[in-house]
Amino acid sequence: MIKYDLHSHTTFSDGRLTVPQLLERATEKGVDVLAITDHDTTAAILPAQAYIEQHALPLKLIPGVEISTRWESFEIHIVGLAVDTSSMDLMTLLNEQQSKREERAKEIGFRLAKRGYEGVYEQAKLLAGDAEITRAHFAAALVERGVANNIQGVFKKFLARNKTGYVPSTWCDMATAIKAIRAAGGISVVAHPARYQMSNKWLRKLLQEFADAGGQAMEVAQPQQAPSERQFLGLLSREYGLLASQGSDFHYPMPWLELGKNLYLPKDCQGVWQFWEENEEC
Image (cartoon, rainbow, N blue to C red; front, side, top):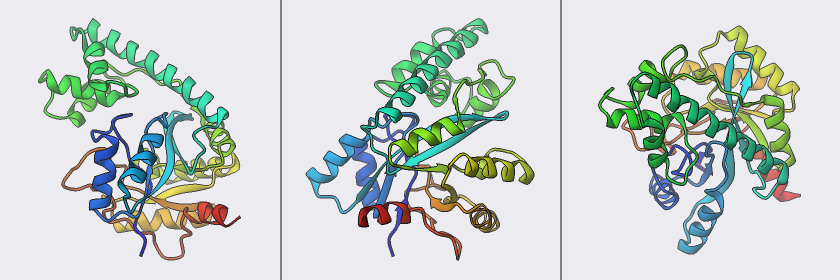
């Protein structure tokens, strides 16, 4: 059976493994098909393709990206899979997203400095290196300063809504992200739909509007997930005519989350990989 992991991150966004480290780990864990889906950038894709070819890794790479969007009062992440990374439509959107990410980061740094945490923006930029700066880099910087024990603690104390370092995002809307992904020949996927802390009524509204805007798939399976949640998401994928995806959302090794771990779809779900398999046959 083919092992798919269609959601992962590298040091080009907020992952902690370099491209070679991620690819080698995926191979070690028996992943057959891996999608790299960094936040608002596809910078890891060409190096990954080159590394796989150079080292003859038994791994199929699916070019991907995870785009942050705004829907109602929620930040919804849309994963693009099997995208053409040379698409001008997609690159234009990602450049706009990166500019918004930088502006937001500067404002987070300004607000933290006003509360006595000076230089956090510069520290976060240093941690990000050549990658797109994310709130995770701010969290890591504050952990280094000892203001919280872990990244989750920093988010809860400083970066969550109504906290000192919270800055509302100005991301594109869902329809814009879906349009850019489709223009790049890819398939759009609602990422981790159970994580948005919304009622089932709102989740159904999200999926309906996503589908109406041309969205094609949703993540159904993740490693750390109750069986009842997986079954429910599988039911929703069938109800709204969406293909089902699976992915670890891997950022770094953790005891309870690993590349390719516990990833399988409920019965009667149609795997998102049918999309590129059908395209390859054409």
